[in-house]
Length: 311
Image 1: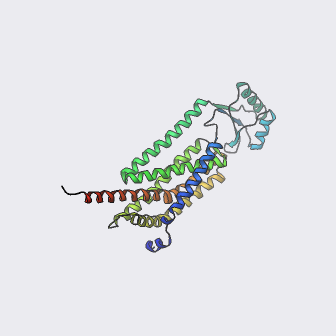
Image 2: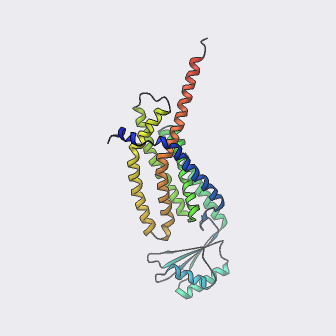
């Protein structure tokens, strides 16, 4: 494949401001939505009660919901579990009192012949889970910037972190818009996307570094832009093929995996697309801007040294 010929047809650098503007506007609007609509936090992060309705035969969500409503209770969320959908898992954000829990258990014991299992999340536990989730993401980000800095250089590390936070915020914004429940599987999906995104970014950075070695002189923005655009063209097909393969798998999981995996698989699909976009059009472009500024400062220092009078 003639990359030089392809480079003349695909100029990603020319559109870098459009990429920055698109991401900036989307994330700005998203932050407003996050501050107003917020996230639909599941029982993992809010205090509440989970009741597992157990049956010897398969049940439907409507059937279990009607049984709850018949005694005056409406779960905030209800999903089916078990090999044959013989368990209905109902979540009540805010929690139920002991008397209410006993009433529910008694009712379903009469209906299905099994005593429902009850678990309660206190506000302290929910806050601890949220805190640990944030710490996990920050630790991952710190480890990534350290690794990329050691393997490449500090500017690559900064660019990679900008792309990662772009991906994380992108997923949060989408979940705020669709109001899908945020739970522990969601955090697992975000951490998975962090790993995938940085892998894709490193592949792009590695190609940039290799192409930089073939350049005799890299003095200004145009020189760096030519190298970055050539590298993006060379890695474009690989990035698209990889993300399509994984998106198909995550999409199948979303459609066929059941309610329990829906949040995880949906977050994966959104994050994979955002991660590929940021690796190609955010991380590489941010590095281009930072590297160009660094070269400009070096040139200015050389000029100042040359202009200093000899003593």
